[in-house]
Length: 359
Image 1: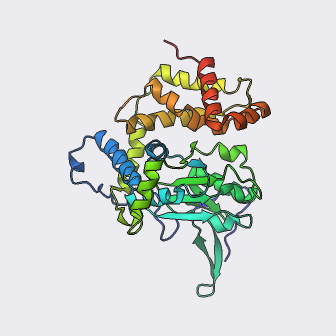
Image 2 (image 1 turned 180 degrees about the horizontal axis):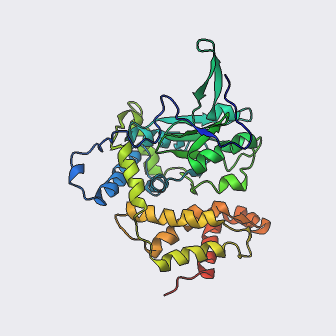
Image 3 (image 1 turned 45 degrees about the vertical axis):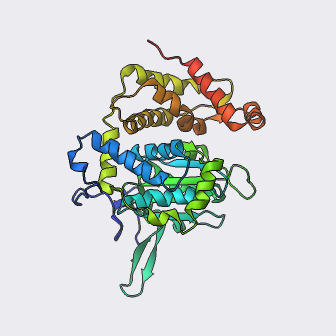
């Protein structure tokens, strides 16, 4: 029979058959590293982050800072929005992450206006053999999901992603099913071509942990990319360097990084400053405060520290907060004239001036 939900009743929770979901009974895999057993509890997650970043950079040339931001988002259990033109290795990035993690799976969805929510989350299909409706999981049930040109999907389909991004679960026909862990969503939107697109609503933009751009490589890096593909694709040589359980420990270790009270208070004042700037119509929400605090923890861990420094906050202010802010029309127009990078630096400086570090 078809699954149904009584009005007002809580949704049932059901795992997806054949898809690895969070399970405390699942035996832990050891990282693919002969020396991992000699690491201290903090050193092992640091080494996990370094090995993962190095593996990704073996196919993504000249983008160390951007790759580190993605690993930072993964460590903090967040999602990434890429503002990028086509052909800048976003699909390769997602596949490189998945292939570098032993047991991880990656899927890609090309968003179009006719893409339906069920095409992403899955749906119940009637089985003539069992004479019952069986759930067929959609491509969102994976570890690394690439949503290409997410702004070409309709608002209805975009809204279907909110539960998955915020709660790492999907509810279909009144049944809630957990997503595999770790779960990292990488979405892209073309900043040049807007015909036939739907702007992402503020509620969905706020769900993205950070926004960045890979951009075009430098001359030397582009030359290396051409040479790397002379005898096949570099992805063919990517092998697992960490395990799923190692990623889980990396995420847990991020939560233990120390942020002193002065820096926490500074983070809150910076986020609150975005709500009072004259170039801003709508400032960052409380979710922005939470994301920035989590981001600096992950960044410090990847840097080999068990504590956060002010430079971490300054470095991550724009990637974590800028997409959560609605700028005034005059500032947006000025940004198109001066360039996005210069305008965002101006935004960061205004935030820091409005909320200077005390002590």
